[in-house]
Length: 322
Ligand code: COA
Image 1: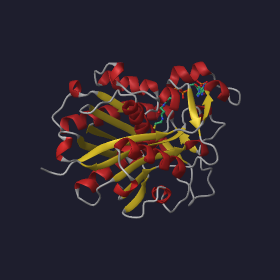
Image 2 (image 1 turned 180 degrees about the vertical axis):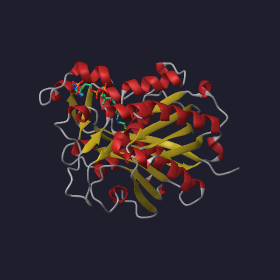
Image 3 (image 1 turned 135 degrees about the vertical axis):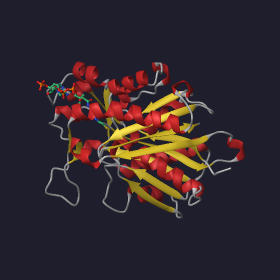
Image 4 (image 1 turned 90 degrees about the horizontal axis):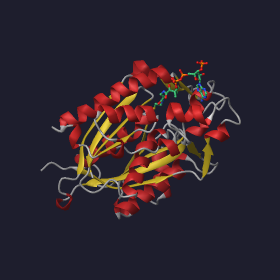
């Protein structure tokens, strides 16, 4: 049988500080009612000075290893998705590797904005299937609070900070049907100006802040996410009724609800964290996974579909038997 990769554990980390909508309404022209009605967001976690991309990523990774019952000696690859690395290089993945005391294997960062975790999971699946790695930490870690224009009420209310991680290893006979069934990635660079960060270390003349055309992103999100989930199901000969859990990217409650309706899923089968975490970009899917596995909702054998869409434009899905 072809080698299959398994998600053996998941974990998350959220900054200590919580900022409510009411708190934001003291500095910008917004209200708790507007934010909740348009997005479902009630609060977000905001990183303190020491809660960096690598710091949070390492803690989420350690939690994923503990959940899997695995030690750092089992890790031979670290793949970290972020749009907010601490440095241009070394890759934040390697800062995490160093912090966890891992001294073998390889690591790199993935830049795919909010789709970053799905992209990183696809890379982990590929290196495990081809035998290049036998224990992969897949991490999404983001500090969007550092790239926000805090005077732009159309964007700064939407995002939060945090990290999530999964530990991926080859399946064994004891895993049965468990594993990553397939991943599906897409990108369309011609849509890059709908959602972007204006500058980086190579363009210090720019603001370095996030810019978004919210309406257009919303329009693309529902259509593209529904299509990429159906693509994943079709590739495996499965239908909507086979899904146990939808773990969507947590950008906006209205997008999540629209996805649930398109997939004929009752809301009880959709994992939602956007109300408490806001949009944590590449961290949102693994944070939601960690919550739903941690509280016992997602059980062994469940079929889980994950999806995400973000700046690039990038989008993708993963179908996983837990
Ligand atoms: N508080 C109060 N009013 C706000 C506001 C805020 N935080 N943000 C925008 N507004 C105002 C606008 O200025 C506008 O006012 P105007 O009509 O007087 O000009 C009005 O609300 C409507 O703005 P609009 O941008 O058209 O609202 P919307 O219904 O499209 O909702 C988003 C805005 C951002 C919530 C919505 O477009 C969205 O969620 N898009 C997807 C974003 C996303 O998910 N991005 C991440 C993808 S990874």
